[in-house]
Length: 127
Image 1: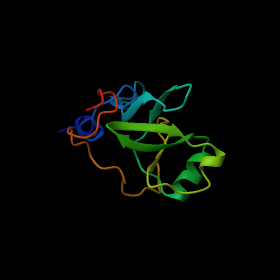
Image 2: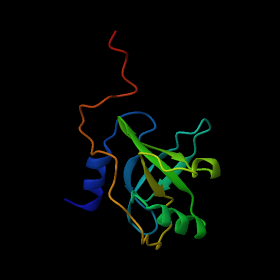
Image 3: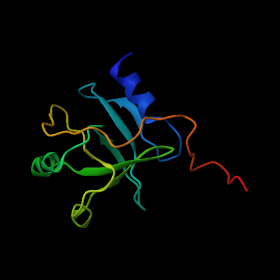
């Protein structure tokens, strides 16, 4: 199983804003691409590598955006702005993808792998 297949299986694919596993068009790294969960969503390309607080600080110093990643059906991301960086959540913090950039301070993911039988936010209500 390739790294892209493992990432696709782990991400799952439910919901309209769920991230998809793709290859970076330039460096061919396995990355996650999709729409941010902002009100005015924008297309993001992120490294699915959970960062420690020090790793997030290094990413910000390198000029990379960081995103909070969580699972509701599929995996979604939300841009971490200055007021959202003041505390750690029970979610992963993923960096924006930049070809050739290596992240030193990473941690184990807090997001559970896709089970394919979880909650689908786009499904009709059961009542």
